[in-house]
Image: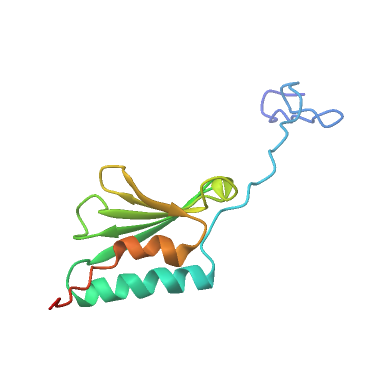
Length: 128
């Protein structure tokens, strides 16, 4: 071998070039996401508040443990509400929760429509 030839590394028996054992890739975890029915329910409430001028922007985050729909009054602020879906809590407290800007859980439950009622404005009526 001369000095001008490049050195070629050839792994033996599945080992890496430096003799370390092969790296096992962890299985890819599934993302938690909202399905079409859930997004429809969330966007109905969101649309009513946008039409009223209360909310202006939203963001979706999908992770391994939970999916989050964040609601903003302005795009440059922290979210005023977060609608979270955590399947790990489905049998305990319920998979859905609404969290305020301070981190206070406003409502938690198994039914998304019931949980979203906390975001609906109270309707005032005349009592005679």
